[in-house]
Figure 1 (cartoon, helix red, strand yellow):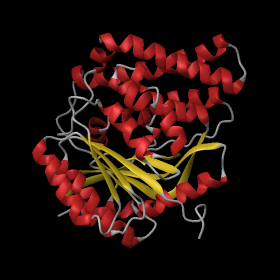
Figure 2 (tube, rainbow, N blue to C red):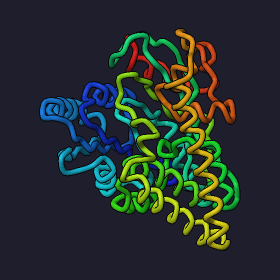
Figure 3 (cartoon, rainbow, N blue to C red):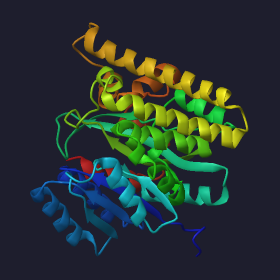
Figure 4 (spheres, helix red, strand yellow):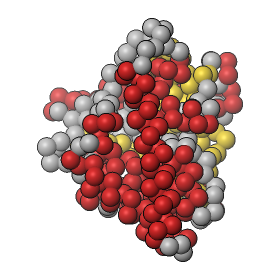
Length: 350
């Protein structure tokens, strides 16, 4: 069997002081005998780093894990991710949060698709998010929701970017070619702001480079947590010292990509990026304004809870109504096999 028939995907996981969640994830990959290597960039305190290392020693006979410690005082998260990508040996790669899960079979399917479709820069399956009734590593599931991932198939870089600005969701959970991802992360030293450096630049460069395909199989399961560190208030973000210079580099990089790929003028390309980003920013600020200052009812719906845990989902819901509450009985379209789903549920539920 050749690489195109059964490609491997490097799973890169930056983490800091989330050892119990990361170990939960590694135990899942070991349980399903995942063929994909997990690359861990650990910036945890000594006690949690040692717990992760012990878990790796226990599981490494079942799954392949590459571990490197990155002192938090020396490496910001984007730099850690860049160094992790340099270690990946596989042709394809995917980002993994330390408390989330990828279904290995779906990763293989995504890589197989990319092998035969060079016009696509990424491919992903379907996504689900869940939350617990009470916070913890394992618990009683309080609800599920669809986690939207982007289907982007416009023919030009400008039209793909315009679509992505209107319907933003993070593309890093999709499978990419490793060479592409390394090229994106080489630019992070130009960005002092962590959100531009760790998500926005890569997500939009991926869309500028090519289309994004949806595979009809469950790939991503995300854990919505109230106790997880959050992005600071958006108004503080856009008024911070780091924001302006980072935005200008982000804007100019995307403009250059549009000019290079579409052959349009600099002004046309700049109009696309500035209009798109302004629209995205308006929605983000409006969302946080409503959350902080407008009166709401004491009882939150499942959708409101998930948009609190994953703030960008609110934008997606309001524009496309793609975020829909899911009951246990309506998960069937997302699950390729009952056994795959039971392995996931057993990994996070009591």
